[in-house]
Image 1 (tube, protein in one colour):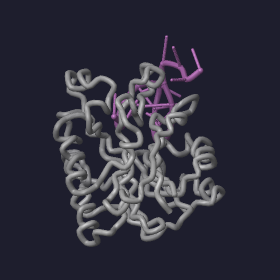
Image 2: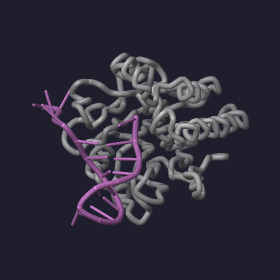
Image 3: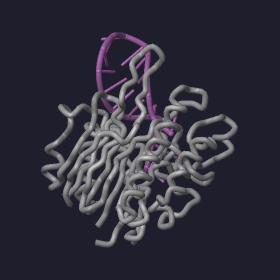
Image 4: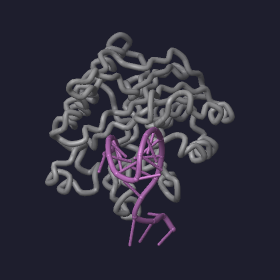
Length: 268
DNA sequence: ATGACGGGTAACACCCGA
């Protein structure tokens, strides 16, 4: 069985690529981020045609998450416990479409689009940290309630947990860029301390192994990327892993997303 | 070639991404 996560950077713009990828990847469950559409614009028929059930959560052109499965799709949730809302001062906070869950073949699958943070001094940064802390509390509660629970936290985490997860750590640190700061990394590692494991890393060792390459400045051909997309698994799920890969072929050519799919293989 | 940013909305720019 294969499960995967992929930030597609607009599902409508990437529809042909997503369909072709489903065709060749033999993927059973795909967590999608940045659909960038409302339900009424969602390409439902693409997934039907390919034999997948799909659930989507999107409210406007920002964010948007979905889960497609050909092994069942039940108990869809569109938020986690105490998921923070974001609102600029003077405006009502809004729950953003950044998380959804569904149970697929006994696995509690989450499709997650962690807030970017924008800059270390921006009000989106404390939002990002709080968002992750709430998610961790929720994820931890699932495993506490049932130590045998198979939970997959899949998505675009917008954090590079280790120095080798960016092509030039000095550039990031010296320019006070996001994704590598101690508070962001601590928020990520808290999941590992809670028993969740990065299921792909041991099968895709770095350095120089990434899941995202900026569209600008020839980042992809120059191999200047970031590892920021992860599948974190509960102990019971981690015990089933037999392999993992990053499909960097998918980043090539015209019309690619700036993220590549991350695939984890499990025992049946 | 893996190649010089792209998507969406609304408007003839601007927001957003990391």
